[in-house]
Length: 319
Image (cartoon, rainbow, N blue to C red; front, side, top):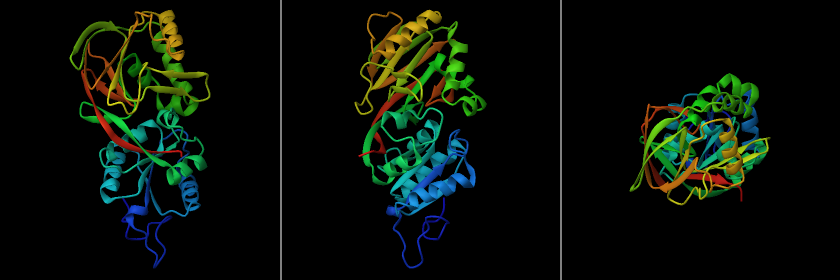
């Protein structure tokens, strides 16, 4: 991370007019984000957008997840005004992991494939609108989940969703955007594979055969540019101190289609192939072990042990 006490390119303090670290923004750019473009052009656009608001900033390009998390943590420890995540949900999630529990807010510039967190909080998709939110927005404290000791912002899951995420390769996402998940989804939902799950949600224990189990913190899924808008659980909230456990057990493509139709219309009752619970802590085991994902990124295999960290994250949202 640049030393805030010395000039570091765009956003460096003018001679004789230093800015306190508490006034500075650290802008973390993921050069692999499919919609960001990357390179010097993106950095110039970011610099111009933030400079137009008259605020000091540093720009740091980081591609590794661990690097994003560490840079965000160091910025929070140093007392930066905000950390700006430029990329998709994976970039935002890593940034929130780095700032968790510090009170330092994360601003989102949604340049990724899904951009679910930005959609959940009404953050504009344009560079100008999202930068305005970063500079002029208000703080919103949100719950974060933890799975196997790591914070997550959106959803952890095992089974079908993890298979879809894994098959939506970087090449597919760069070519088709969000539609890459549809391509991958069609491949996986024709004959969804099932497993025997054991789920412990607080003091309740359940054994069930299913294709997918989700543990959701923020459960509103928006498909940009497509007529889709899903709330994966009936009472999902980002600040209720609870995780939503969603169990889906479709056996074939028609049952998948029926579930999607019901969820899109928030008709959760009346389908024995769907089950919803809320809990502060959750354990998910499966036989055989299944692939897992966290915030859209591969996360090994089951078992998963999750809990909620109430109001541990802070983001900047439009006024």
